[in-house]
Image 1: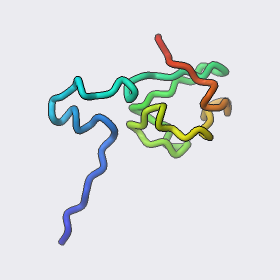
Image 2: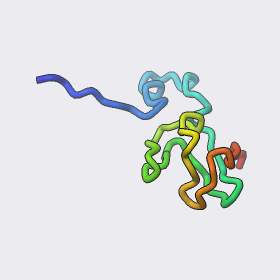
Image 3: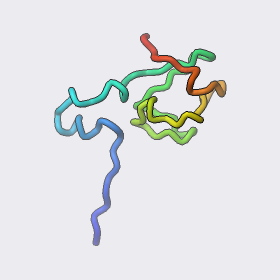
Image 4: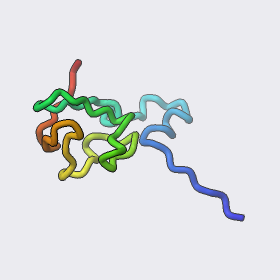
Length: 81
């Protein structure tokens, strides 16, 4: 019987190894929709939009859109709140 391979969210291996410094800020940076105020959190992703948890904003396809108002990915900016 072959062992099943696990897939982990981005940065999880760094947590397991205790190397928190290796976690990219890209996977922790929040992004806000300039149109409606929706905040994209990489830890949550957008499962309904096909974006799994652990996905950095930079890794989201360019044709993705805001799940609340339909704004383009280009209409998001880093959230500094």
